[in-house]
Amino acid sequence: MIYELYIIHYLIMKSNKIPCSNISTESYTGKEQSPKRFGLSAEGFDVNYEKEGYDNFIWSVQIRNGRKVWAKKCNMSKITHEVPLLTSLNQVINNDDIVNDNLTNDTAISISSETSEEVPIETPKEVKIEKKRTDYNIFIKYYLDKLKSENKDNTPHKILFQATTLEWNRLKKNPDELKILMDNIKK
Image (tube, rainbow, N blue to C red; front, side):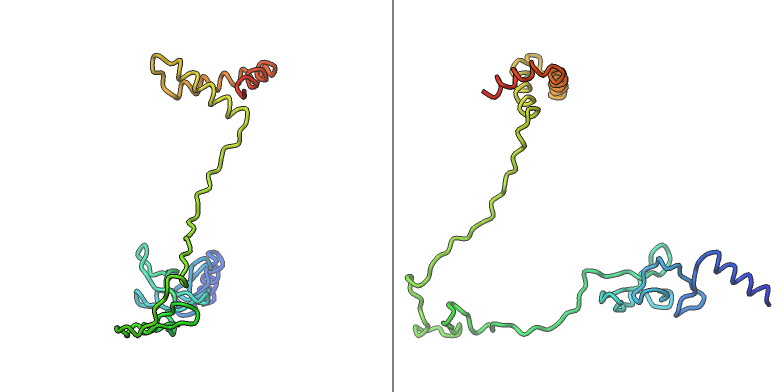
């Protein structure tokens, strides 16, 4: 008897698993997700059983890899009834005027064109971010355009770009020549 308790204690200590609170045959490590924090096994519940958790989300029991596990339903929220601010019978036109929609004769209040103002709706404009105009960007654009105009045998763009970067690296080693060329390009 003592030997069996020692083995059980050794297995629990070895695997770092603690028995679940609702099913004594199941155990958990603390890394499993559970609605009421630690120790509530999904094996004790039916599939699709839902329970509200400590985080006020709905948790449901699902089968994954042949085992029942708790899964959080994040997109589900509690549905509450709200009283509508405006009823379908009345429609607010101005701050002070209320027109009854059920009136079909000429007794309805009409709004003159002088009192109503059309406000243009401003649409957000796309902000175009310009590239920073560095010497490298200016040189690459200039030299690529030059190579493309001189290109008679339809050399691929990739090879032209490689030639451009090689020329840039050569010019970086000769700062005087680079400065003269950049002054000519910027004019």
